[in-house]
Length: 453
Ligand SMILES: Cc1ncc(COP(=O)(O)O)c(C=O)c1O
Image 1 (cartoon, rainbow, N blue to C red):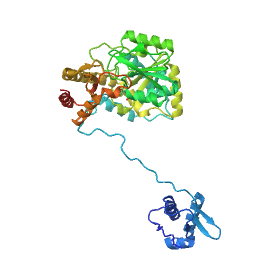
Image 2 (cartoon, rainbow, N blue to C red; image 1 turned 45 degrees about the vertical axis):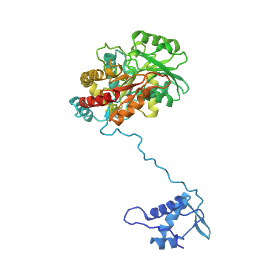
Image 3 (cartoon, rainbow, N blue to C red; image 1 turned 90 degrees about the vertical axis):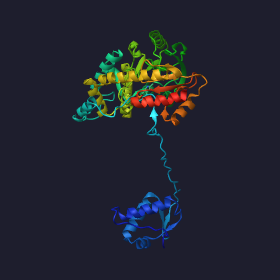
């Protein structure tokens, strides 16, 4: 009896013949080309048809039998078993992330300037890493001890935050640190206050952990501490440069926030994302420096070097650090050794400090240029620090529509509405001046000005 299906074998591909045959029968059943109850040829017929030995045909049937695809009825042959065919898997191949078109100038905030050429310090660090052997076994789940020591010295010196290696966890950046903290210290349903407007990815992290996000208003000085209720488990705050409006939380408000946290028992989460860059204002030390028992501090390399490195740090009490380290041990979730070793090398030879000094000079010039060019078209805020300014616009402006028109004209820029949730406020554009070259920055600003005027 013929199968009416064209089973064939290929002796050149090195796959055992009985496996080739079994797979073709399997595929025919899976696709519904032969159905439950269909009678298959005898091993004698099959071997003749396909030109293989009878033993090969028998081995193919034995395999299919063992897997449950076929069944033998004594005396009456071999039949396809009643296996409900699985509809074929639908593989979604659509691109999730559309990279900007190559000729789109970007003024979206958050990405530092990356020069086209690498510099000595960067190469020195990687040479140093490549000359070492990787460590034996799994590294420390909190991060390389030498790196934590070097970073403790760094945040002490640069952010006035006195701490030791036992207070540090090396992370894959701010959002990773935030997620680790939420997973180990807060429970789904807990209430967390977050600045509105604020950092979208932090809000996403809180929501995906099942937290109840409470919108807190901000003003020109940052988070309005007086509006915080007493039923909060945590507050996420960007005190050094409110994201995206740019206020710097004044000392009186910082003290008020710490007093409030001590009274209510809430955890303060300080996102210190771009504090390294500050222009014509005196540095304010990290909020965590006031009380490391109440504040968890999140630092990142994303603004100093590149967000692609996925490296940052979390500074907290030893209780929090130990909890996170234990959690990571189980989850096997910590930054790869080469990246940590490279950061250690960059810290030890002073490269990171040098880079921040150099970038600060570049960004200060760009900030001046951006403020000067845009000042006639709105109210510039947040210009004292960081890598972006916000241009507040008259109430009647639709900032999303404006950003869409800018995109059509060749400039990517973020509308302030993107950062707002429940609390209404003025429209505006959040403008990052760090990413493009000097030339492209001017070009992009001119295009924006055309639209604004
Ligand atoms: C407010 C804020 N925090 C943190 C970050 C950096 O996050 P990460 O360290 O995860 O790259 C950004 C980047 O845009 C940011 O805007």
